[in-house]
Image 1 (cartoon, rainbow, N blue to C red):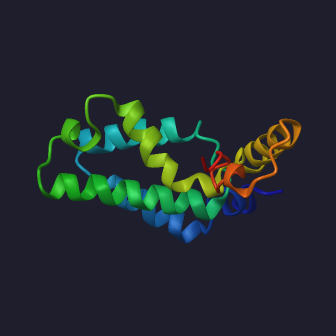
Image 2 (image 1 turned 180 degrees about the horizontal axis):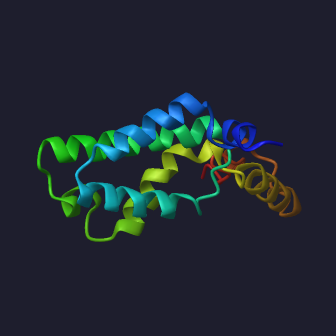
Amino acid sequence: MDVSRLISKVVGDKREWRQYKARKQRLPENYRAALDAAERYANYSGLSDGDAIMRMLGDLIDLFEQGAANSTPIRELVGEDPAEFMDEFLQNYKQGDWKAPARNRLTEAIRQAAGEDSDENAPNEQGRPMS
């Protein structure tokens, strides 16, 4: 598989990716450095769906562009614990998480093994029991 197909499969449309990179390049240096760090952290999130990745990156750069335009300090954008900020931010994109099906299977298997048949204990979209 050539690189452009791989990028298209993993990241989505090349045009979207190039637009994202161009937007990122226009950010002030310190916002771009913070976005680079957030991007690196997101690489370990388990997102594997190209559309989910591009939505996440689009929302993330929107946040940093707005912050830069309003001269919002970076700490005000991400808070005192950037990892916690990113973990919470990434929760919005879990449907593109490669772990979601495995999480759902595990939750369902444990529910069945425990003899729990009620729907109230069935996993939600994030693979967590509803109750």
